[in-house]
Image (tube, rainbow, N blue to C red; front, top):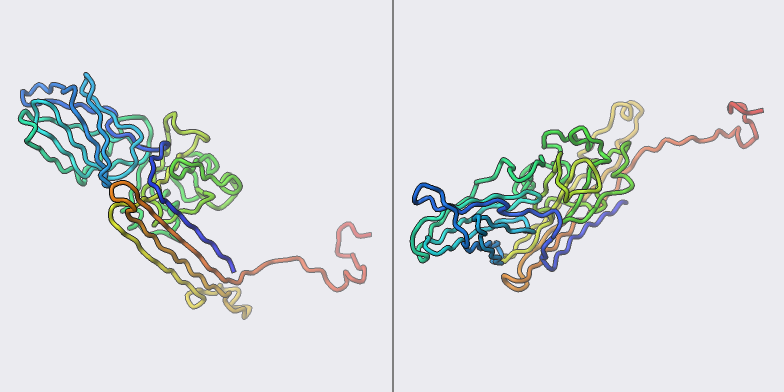
Length: 330
């Protein structure tokens, strides 16, 4: 019987400094009330996460602001400047390994007045920050798209230029680089074997319940990527929030649902035994509201199966010293 257990524990949500997204790399605040699009330096910009953590920066003389090393997730931005109404943008998504550009037009008025803009459903489709090519898959897509064996890596082949065997944009399967929260999880044994069968193999298995988002950069990665010249696969695990949430699942398969092949049926051989149970669950929530969170994920597999093995078995004549069937026998 084969047993596999996979556990992800995240007691503390800390910033993952590598393979993260940057928000607002080139963003101009303009006062369009006079129709001339003047920039607004000295505006105070606040970035607020779903956990209500807050970061603030000030626009420079060119009206530009930058937030670096931002965790992927949903955010809102609030902007205040003297002589202008307070502006608020909510529900925009920061994606892994992709700069997000947010431009805001401030209106002349009192700071006590607020202009709210809901950016839900709006996505930066064209990447204007660098020359890298690739796509992001968020939690909703990971949960809704069908998967074989709950293997998240199977979704990678949905991108253009990616094949199920692991080749990306003409590159070989052993040229890909796989990271989880910025940490190298490449399988140095089978993942780099171009004659193997497993694509995008990592030493740590991930499942749809533990992955919040991932991105595959198919070509032209920037200088922050390294190790290999092929595809760069960046996976981000889920974290806890201010709300408790969880799920349980069980997948069962047994011999009743298996089919015998033609030759085994012709030889009167019964179909091989197969009993497989894949089960697990996840739980996340707050330890200290707005400050400390936890996330736990467990997946286990129990499998009992019969397989056919082909072996060379010596005849009884070999015990008597009869070696006439060997080419080099004397």
